[in-house]
Image (cartoon, rainbow, N blue to C red):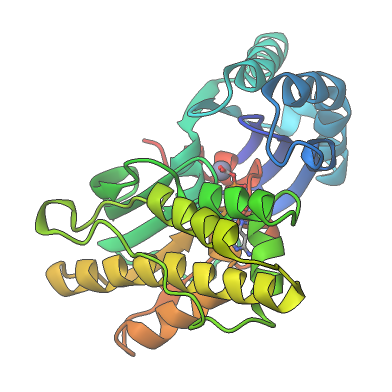
Length: 316
Ligand code: KG4
Ligand code: ZN
């Protein structure tokens, strides 16, 4: 079964063809990320207009790269939520039109569920359920038990900023550009993660699986305001200490969830799953015999349409 996926929930205009939920036949992404550099974050109006400009060429290329025609496609998959409404509408209207013209079933999927299925792309072995999945992005941050395909029990979520959003805001504060995650983690390589002590919130019993990163972001701001000078080494140390606090919090929750639930695998998904410290600490802190997965390609971590096509394949 070949599914054509479309994803336009934020600033990536993406289309892809995926066979049988795992084999990526094409994966095209046009990002308007450069246009958001100056503002240090996505401007919804700008993102939506870029989707309008990019959607047709991206779709044509995805079909051509797969070496297919519309008659070879079994269904159209589209992200419907969550996301920026004007951006989502560009994808939804386009998907509806293609499905109508070519008489294909239209399948809707949640963006976060899409991120979960990014982990199954190009995987040789099927997932072993139940598994624990941490989805960490700019717009969402969730810890879920996955008991079977499309069977989720949410253990926790962010009560304010998502981890990726915190990276983006700290990067803006430090003048490191957008998106913040890659920029902050690059600076952190040269920094001392113990120089600044930042809070690791939401550890009380009631919120044991929830996340809150807005206090951490404010703590970084206060530290910056108190500093007399911010040279390169200080910025690197701030980045390293901040990254250690965010990733340490994510890992603490993962470890607790693994202790309290019997799972066969742990999955990291979403933009922040590209973070090397997160991957390293997950491997180090979780039991040796527990397999830990993250997307096989970096491009599957951040927003893409292959994950959307994959997710719909496993919808019954
Ligand atoms: O999944 P995604 O493309 O978009 C949303 O659904 O939000 O994730 C984008 C987020 C951004 O906040 C970006 O700063 C973060 O993922 N990110 C990272 C890294 N690469 C991307 N955060 C930390 N470390 C990274 N290496
Ligand atoms: Zn996303």
